[in-house]
Length: 212
Image 1: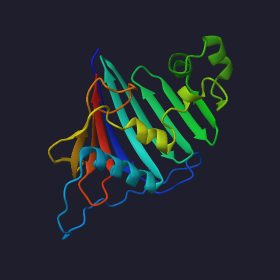
Image 2 (image 1 turned 30 degrees about the vertical axis):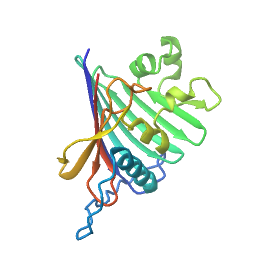
Image 3 (image 1 turned 135 degrees about the vertical axis):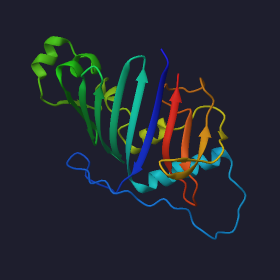
Image 4 (image 1 turned 45 degrees about the vertical axis):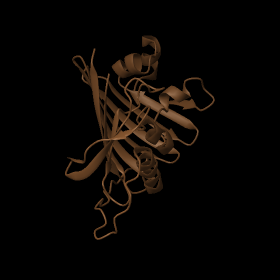
């Protein structure tokens, strides 16, 4: 089945994510009147954009994945050592994941516990609506906590393979340039084919797309 994703990033102020998230969008306008400089290579532009995003301390990501007749929506807030994720599935699954320090926590409805997290039906029934903790020492931690810290989320956006720039365009009203990777060369299936970054003196990731 053919799948496509579009990742839209919103930079946010640093917040205590597991308790509450007050999202504050930063202005992303470019600096006017600056002296022209040689354009950076695609690889240099990627490094700068990811470093600028990391320096902001926390980000908000909205992702939609479509395959065949199934749609999955994922909303994620991540900071350096903590993150929160809400997952909805067109089949009715609803899942929630938190990472705080060295522990991940997950909960969800019965469909999500069984089909998304892979719990046996009897265990899912016992868990009910309670949260399940997964320490970093557990073999299941990496899967539950994937992309729920700032470093891992930014790594997942890195386009695979040799990089090239696309022509300037606009995403959500912002002037951007795309950094295109080489399809099929990613080590991980979640890497983006194209990452769009703002056309400014401090480029920042704002969206990505991938297909398979």
